[in-house]
Image (cartoon, rainbow, N blue to C red; front, side, top):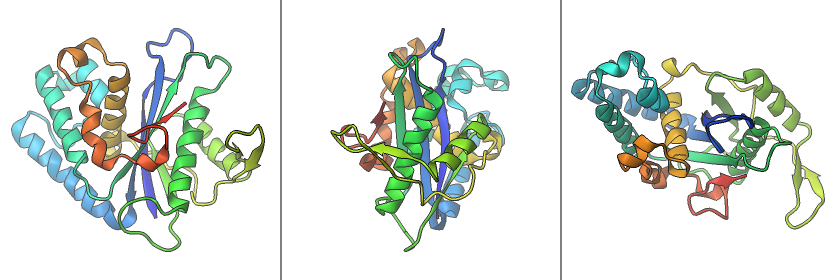
Length: 252
């Protein structure tokens, strides 16, 4: 079984939105490596707690840490960015983890549902990579996948995945025709996770944030030279998700 933890960066709005992009990232780990990865995430939080005034139960959420730190204002801003850099570096060394990334350019898509567009692409890449057995690491002969998104528009996502199990039109390459490739390998409804209770959601939140900052960095990220932090993840990116981007990013 493959478990995909998903979070976003940016928003799906098309009017008065502060961002031209919506980013969706999925961190995929096989059930046989889940406990190992959880242990590594926990040990990382313990190391960070020893060096910074951050308790293990306090969340590492990239955007909030830098823009709306709340109680974490006790930590200097440059130290908060240092924590995020260490987190990215740690994720990049996880064996047999794979990260699928989708970026929607919102300009010119006024008549489209950005949420559905991004999620449909992410689900399809997750499905394809399982079916072609392209994820690294251990596998079972009949592996399936399930999705753990951050809490949000769970009803809309549930309805989308249920539809895709029966009707999922995918265009032929260089053709106006479609074929119905119903989703076969992703089981159950998405099971939302509260980020405070999930180290995996905190990890993929950080990934999505720095992908967004690679594309459209804010002034602080530019000033600190942090717009290339996403590139540190090269070893764990699911590059088979796209044959047109060297990092496997699916651009829509």
